[in-house]
Image (cartoon, rainbow, N blue to C red; front, top):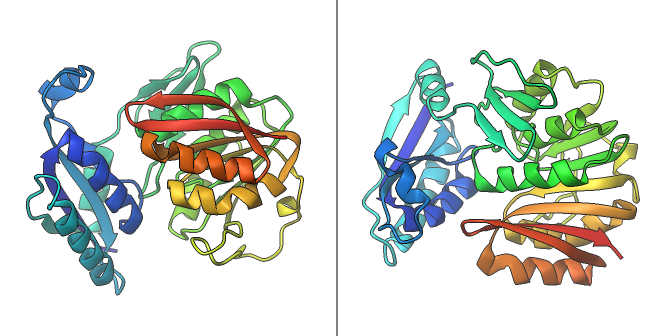
Length: 314
């Protein structure tokens, strides 16, 4: 399979809007390349916005032209607000895409115990560390994005040994794997994107947690934004009401809002939801949807503009 790479050079302020657009229409997580000499500036709130390159990838098949058109239309509209030039589009063969993708990822420590290790790197975890080996593929969730880091930190605090978990929008499977390594006895990892399933399953196998983690293509009922309730391989008892002690959902804010009643329905009494994928201006929107579904927000965390929420069933 060949790929199309779409890239845009802009400042770090506009990059968040471009990332959201690319995540909506691209295949997997957008990649943000920050020049090495600008990493320190990213940590300085008074620094001028640095130039960054935002990339996404499309499978060069029949669906690529539609996705490319939507991306280009979205960039045009963003360009009325932000300084965004014309995108650069180039074709990549499978092996070239794989190398381009790998260059973006390095070993990363998240929270107190979690270490994200690219599959191609050697690493011996220290005592007490939770090391997660990943072959990111084109699936969202390598541990590099703030929303994934926020979820991993919350997992360290709220994943109880012996608990049952649901991971909605698993992507690369990083959160499901972390939960299993933190002691969860059963994790159901769902993703609506068929391309994510083999990547997540391979990562689960690589980390030796296939006995705890089940990866399936599917989603939950969610009103107009998520109109289809399906599990590609058929009915699964684990999706019955009241099954899960902890639910993880790291998706776009409007999808979280749409799924709030379905999330609450699948929580066991006293169960917890960890939600991320929203920016601070969307927090009230998500909080109100949780309250309406009978979920009470008990914690929040923030990294830059990104927010995670921890909610419990009332």
